[in-house]
Image (cartoon, rainbow, N blue to C red; front, side, top):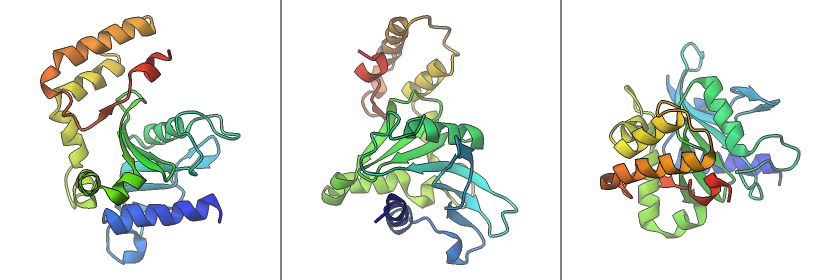
Amino acid sequence: MKETELLGDFIRDVFVDLLGNVGPASGLPVYTLKRESLVQVDGKFADAALGRFTLTDAKSEFIVVIEGKGPRDPLDRPFGSRKRSAVEQALQYAVNLQIDWFHVTNMREIRLFHKGLDPFTYERFETAKLANDDAALKRFTFLLGAERVVPAAGPTHLDAIVADNPLLQAIVAFWSGSVGLVQTRWAAAREFFKIIATHQACWPDSCFIPGFLLMALDV
C-alpha cells in the first residue's frame, strides 16, 4: 500500500473518528477538515487543514494546517529528494496561510507547533502510547478535540493556552525578535535560559514540551 493511501486513512482515523472533525461529505453547512489541495510549497501541497469551511468555499477560515509523511520520515530533516524537512514544509504552509498552528506527523507520532515558537518546541504524541495509555489519550483528545480547536464560533482554545502562559508568551516574543537581536547561538542560549528562569512558576506545567535543548544548540 502506498504512503498516500496509509496517510489518508490515518488522517481520517485520528482527526475525524477520534477528534471529531467533519469533512464535506457530512452534508453540514460548515465542515472542519479540508483535504483538497490548499497551499503550495516547493511543488508540494498540504495534506489537510482544520478550520471552518463551506461547500461553496465562500468563506474559509484556516486554523491548523496538517502535513503528513510516511513512517520512515524523521520530520526534523529533509528526507528523500525533498529540500525541506517536514517541519519546515509545514511551517511554510502556516506562513502562507497566515495562521499560527500546524501539525506534522509521520503516523508514528503527531506534533503540534506554534509558528511563533522555535521549531524544537512542540507538543508530541506517540501513536503507540495513545493506543495503550488512557491518560495520554485523554490529554490528546482534550487538547486537540474539534469542539475546542475549531469551535462553532470564536477563537481556538489553542490561542488561549499561549495567552494564559507567561513562559510561552516570553518564548514567542524571543523568537519573533522583540527581545532584542542576538548575535550568536550561545548568546541565544543564555537569553533563552534567562527566560526559563524568570518563569519558573509555570514550568514544567506548560502545554508544550520544551525540545529546544541540545538540538537547538546543535552540539
